Length: 174
Image 1 (tube, rainbow, N blue to C red):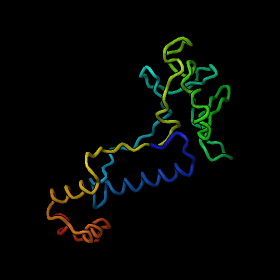
Image 2 (cartoon, helix red, strand yellow):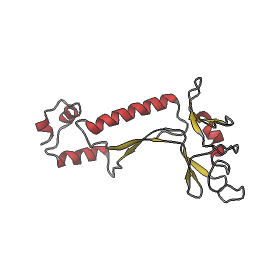
Image 3 (tube, rainbow, N blue to C red):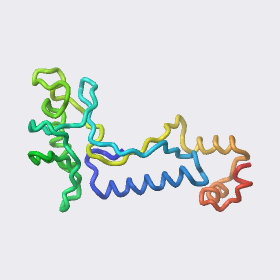
Image 4 (cartoon, rainbow, N blue to C red):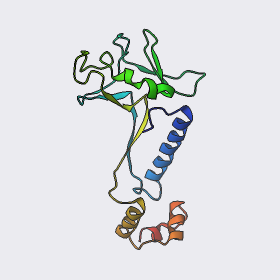
C-alpha cells in the first residue's frame, strides 16, 4: 500500500509496480514474487478500541468521505459530498486526527469515551493495494530454493536469461 500522503506521481509509480508484479506472476519466474491479488482498498482507519471503519464527515454530516482528485493539485483528498469538507493527503500529517474524532467513527462516539480521539490511518483514499505472499527468507534464498525444487540450480547468467524468457524451457525446468 502507499503511504497516506502519496501524491499522484507516487500512485502512478505504484500502478507500474503492480503491472510489473503481474508480469512476474505470469512470466518465466512465476512464483518468485507471488501476488495473491490486487484489490481496491477504500479509506480505512482503526479506532483505538480496534474497530476498523470508513471515516465519516468530521463536521457531523454523517456521510462517508469519498476520494476527490482536485484537478489543480498533486494530492488526492477525502471529501464530504454534503458540506464539501475536504482533507488533502498533502495535509494529512497536520490534520489527520480529524478522521479519528468521535463524529468521524461508528464507535467511541461520545467525547468522554476512552478512545474518542484515538485512531490510526490504515489507508487514506481509495486506491489499489497488492496482497502478496509473505516470505520468511530473502528473495534470493527463495529463488535458490525454487530452483532446487524444480531441477538443477541455474548460474547467474542463466537466471538472467531465464528471467527474460531467453533460456530454453528444457534447461530452466531441469
